Image 1 (cartoon, rainbow, N blue to C red):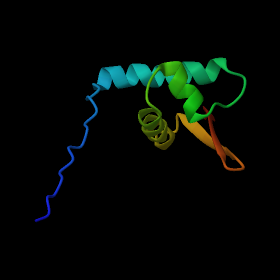
Image 2: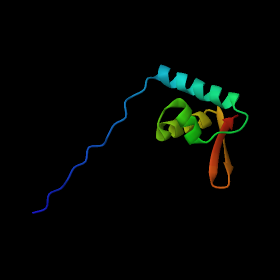
Image 3: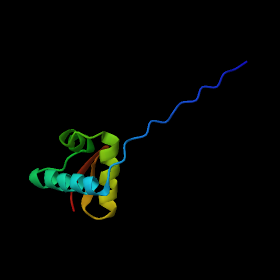
Length: 81
């Protein structure tokens, strides 16, 4: 008899629209104050947020035209548009 193991998917807490807008403004501020483009990891460490959440937020901001993705070799950096 085999036993199937069901894993519960961990859900991240929902972040409200107001809080998300504040985080977006912080990202814009961080990118504006730095002289060079930053990686997703550098931005996530500054915000004290997870890399995955920061990446998703940056991708949404790219679609809105707020930030730009720059590739240098295999590395990706973000800057203001």
